[in-house]
Length: 584
Image 1 (tube, rainbow, N blue to C red):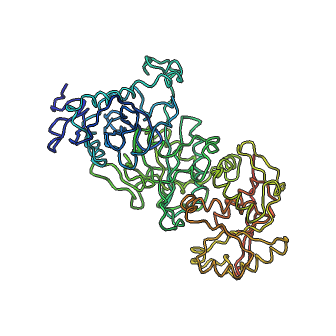
Image 2: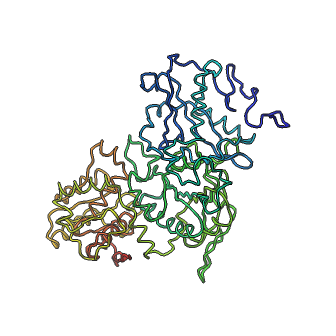
Image 3: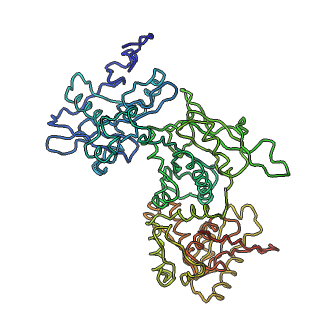
């Protein structure tokens, strides 16, 4: 049926397909291509929900071998639209070469719907203003479909693939509650059986901020999440790591890094519900964030007097780091995912703790996905309180990094958990250690910050000679023979340190280890080793040192062996770090 405009209600007109040889298929302009003509006895479809595309259709030869290199492989993915568009557009696109080798056979049986689309939405036609967006998305992936008229068998395979979206495998259906199985429309469900709508909270931080400050911002956002969860069903989308100032190792791709590379996700989920960004893409239907709030201060500043927590939508003070594309959607950094778009962007002036944003998210917007940019502008709800420490304790390092640190301790520092009394429980909720019970390994742990700290002429950062003098003094006092040093010093300074402190030991990765762990993983390993030292001394106001303080507090060290810092030679009042006692 055509609308008054002459456009079919559920698709494109042939006039939209401009190139010669294009054909119309399911409302999509498809280029004519030439493919392998080998006969297919039967086709099978398998699902891959782990990667960027929601559905991967693999065509198999009669002998059962995979026909990735010779037959047509298609990926189906969903693009959400706004306004009167349907929630999902199903597009057929040529699978990019980098995904051709990715098999879907390891997806758990009955793992659920591949794209996160509700069955009721899967066959709703999108409104007309969504087609331009769909065509642009297809052009990025070099859409190439064979002429269906010449391949009736292929048409049947593709229709079969679409059918799997509407009718899940029997095993999957059996794993669902009875009320949600086939034959039960959403409108026929009792109110108590309908699952609550899930909303997604995303966030980002000012680009110059480093790895350890970003970990602190996560704690603030987790506090906001706990407030939101009292009213609605929210999930926190973890911002992928990458493009950090301190990550300067050459020839290593350090972008789009998932949190699981550095942290244990099940541990995070014991505190608040979290997912990786690529899982958000699969669940939400595509690379779109409905509402972006850029957090900023108040242009008039804070007037002296009574502190007041407040938040208001205001004109943006600084130039936005977003620009509109030709479809009026917002492009941005988005953690290196160039295809991601924001649908709406506005600025919020904020003064207060993280949960001050909650009323805005709960009452002022109904967007399913909301991003808070410049989230470092939010303060902690209760710094050092029980909720703070629960979140901090949940930030368990990824096991492969802890194992690498433990092996290094054992091999080079004669340090083991048994001898050091630093036993670790994989379930952080069950780990409650009495203060002072940890002994630590037979070495001194040091974090010596250099680079931008000394470039800023900080008076509380020692010279290398001053640091070496303090290290020798501590080795003698605590009867230790080795010192592990974590530092960002340049090569010339490292060479000088080795001369000044021959007892120095460092974790120096091979190129293969650096590629595997990346700069963020090396920072984790350094912190893990420092956290197990008999005595630790760090650098003034360094978040790297702060995170080691917290790790040692969790392990049960005496505060006197933890909260220490170097003093500058010209520093008159060398105040030591504050002890923030863990709260269970």
